Image 1 (cartoon, rainbow, N blue to C red):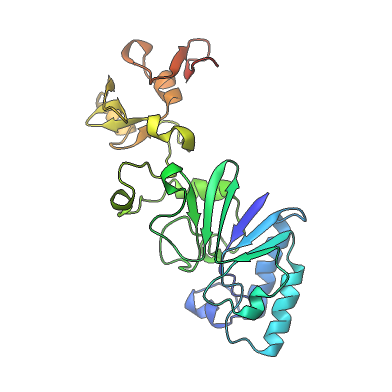
Image 2: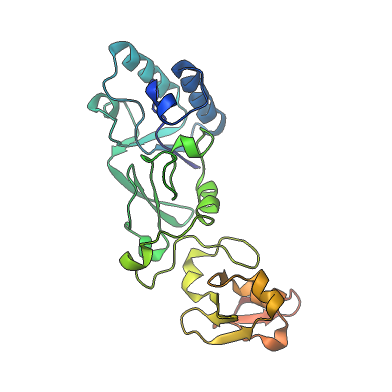
Length: 268
């Protein structure tokens, strides 16, 4: 299991005021953050900290405390270096340290960096970028503890939230014609399979059309237009399951299974 977090800022007293964290003092914050990690991360899990493990300019006493926290963290510990992570932090016995990391979790490519990017390696093929740094100040697939109730999260947690966030306004400028890495089906609300996003149908001008060709699959009545918002994508299972078969042309590569009342990939 992989867990992700960012910006714990252990022993950084001012972060409580800067980010309006709900702790009476830095000791209470440290104890809570550590307890959340220990409650979730197993001894053989990977814990990715996307920067700012502690604050810069720490005193010797604070450094001793931070080292104690480090050794109390469970699992394999990985640091993506942030702007507050001085050399002594990076010299702790992490399982890995780097400015970035390029990994695959549950068949999803993830590019990890402390700082948010407008595009990243793998973005054209539904890869996600995970980042910290901005705390609660900007929407995206961010991992700062301030946005996740001060606990580490899984990729599934991140995907569910990311799919409900607005698409970056500059996405079409940097990756024209590419689907946003996380999208929900307008019908069933599930995250669309990243490998099939470009082949899903989309709601356009009161119709459900094939996304790539604009070929009409079905016209929508008034009630259906309210249910399926303009611009949203619809998975083949919903097209087969919710619309009358006589009105639907299924996407290429799918056939209708009458026993399940669903569109399914041919051959399955």
